[in-house]
Amino acid sequence: MTVFSEYAPWYDLLYRDKDYSAEAAFVEASLREHGVASGKLLDLGCGTGLHALAFARQGWHVAGIDLSHEMIASAKARAADAGLAIPFRQGNACETGPERDFDAVVSLFHVASYQTSRNALAAMFRTAHAALKPGGVFLFDYWYGGAVLAQGVETRVKVIEQPPLRLTRIAQSDHDEQAATVTVNYTLFCEDTDRATIRRVDEAHHMRYWFPFEIDSALEASGFQPAAHAAWLTRHAPNTKNWAAYAVARKNGT
Image (cartoon, rainbow, N blue to C red; front, side, top):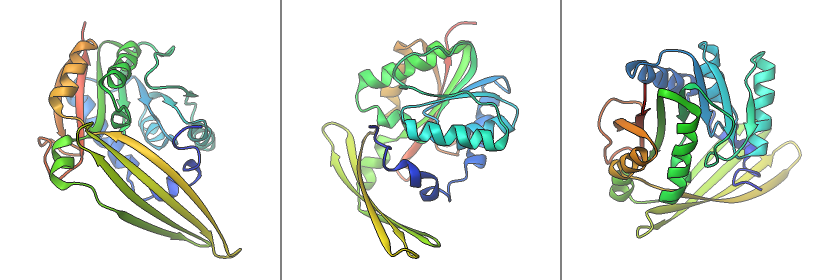
């Protein structure tokens, strides 16, 4: 069972306000700035496939990998409904697979922060390195440690209504500053108002925040040349107001 096994059926509804198309467009622009405008793109940790579909609609030859069987099933169904031939497979981002000769690898929505040790992060980077052609570009986002330490953690509640469903998600976080980790304990109540039923789902997501110097060290050890760090969806340096940051690196070689 993966961390998203119970969470997966409601994942897209919970994040329906997330603009996947706009994020994909931003990533495309960043890839172009680093010399990759088209070709083969691997979505490492693709979730239910919404970013991958957005890239495919822009002409990329996309493939996707995710640890969750349930999310891969959703991604395959979504691609089939859209008439897009995207090879999605279940797999671990920290284990090198058969993917090779990609022009770009992206890993979005904090997949890097689900790697809670330096060894796991390096293994994820090796997977991306193996999938890329020499000179290929790797772009991924992560939780920026400076913002986590500045802001601290808090309990958050999110309510979404799509009749007859009402979803309530409570997120309570535990911060281990010595380990640089945050465990987000999700409690999800899914209420069907027509049937007067409620289902409860509990999941714990163990996350690691990173600093640019740690990431650059792991990238260099994995055969990459680090190129840039910035706050997510901006060209500005990571800052204490935004937990989300991203990094761009290039695989060594020509």
